[in-house]
Image 1 (cartoon, rainbow, N blue to C red):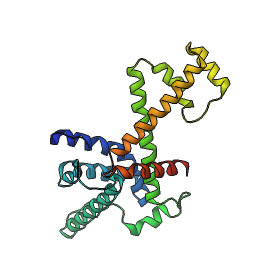
Image 2 (cartoon, rainbow, N blue to C red; image 1 turned 30 degrees about the vertical axis):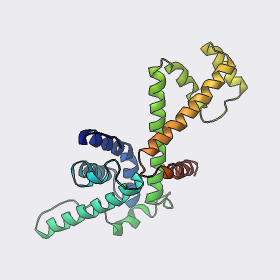
Image 3 (cartoon, one colour; image 1 turned 90 degrees about the vertical axis):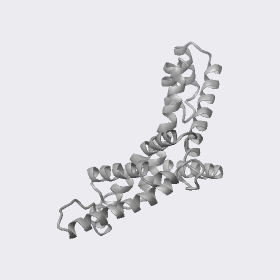
Image 4 (cartoon, rainbow, N blue to C red; image 1 turned 45 degrees about the horizontal axis):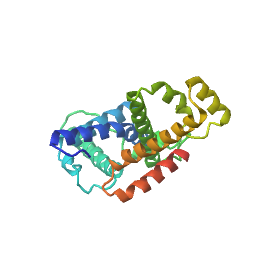
Length: 224
């Protein structure tokens, strides 16, 4: 989380919540909510965190543990309170929308082709993909700022694995650099991407010792 005044810290939290919006929606979808309902619930939840007392728990130095674990617990609490508020309104004679309850979950999700995917599985996989995309976007912005946008775009498909000598030769020739220089650049880009990925995760844990564990779970979620 960002250090500084409350406005800066709130902005940092807002950016994190933007990053986690898709994983949270994926979690609720596997819980049985329809897309629009999941979106609405996540939006109200994020607003609650930013404007409510939950914000204080996420300030720098707070021992919230892993941010994604905290979010799931907080989301479940928020969802429970929302359902209770709707039930209370109905008891008072007011109409209202009630999000799907766990009783509806089996009917909504149980017979789907991916029914073996749990809500937590869906959340973790979407978290992993979103975190990777965010780190890659930061890498792209860095390279663009250095005037290397074209080279980055050409190398992007090959950052995950060795493209082979023939591919190196073709790309090097098209960019007007030597194969050796190109290989060094690819190595540096991969290393910088790993650093940025670690930085993304570091911003979401209280204990730096948890970074490697989170990275391992991220890799497992993507490969699984």
